[in-house]
Amino acid sequence: MENRKRSFFERLTGSISMEEEKDERPGSRKEYTIKGVKSEKGNGKNNSNWIEEENEEAELSIDVYQTPTDIIVQTMVAGVKPEDLELSISRDMITISGKREESRIVDENNYFAKELYWGKFSRTFSLPAEVEPEEVEATERHGLVTIKIKKVDKEKKNSTIRVRSI
Image (cartoon, rainbow, N blue to C red; front, top):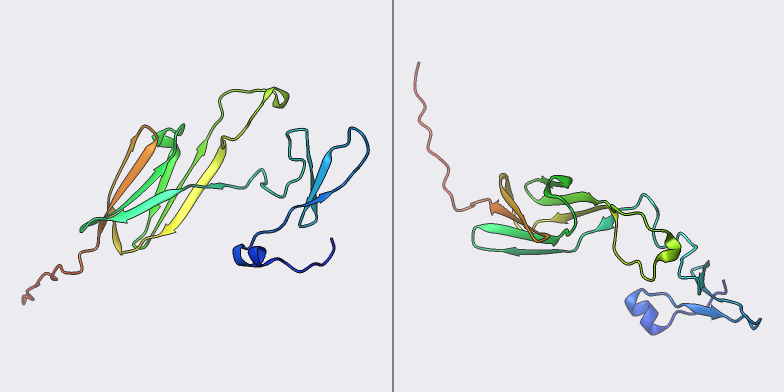
């Protein structure tokens, strides 16, 4: 790949440019080069492995907000049974992971579009406040998982403990 100066937009966004390589032969497919990796356009398949690897996990999209007493985390996991989800919560971090299984087998040549994600997914997120990992309520409704985690009450006074003599 030739060395060229990146455009202002590429430097600003961190994007890369897709350069078209011309092939004037009749019936030839357009070929694109991205960071030295070639993929063909025209057969509906991506023949390169630069986008995803088979064992790579997808990352969940989440919403995180707070109430005066709780941190609320929401994510969409449509098609995943609640028992197939795993939540790990520490005082300042949450990890949501699972696997979406495709139950049907369709020959690749019969697809017109294939955009749904099937396979492992996870998301680890630093929580904006310290929480009580034991005080968690997780519910699922129509694919929306809502996780309600109790914040640590910093205003709560420590218990006074009397020392007694034995």
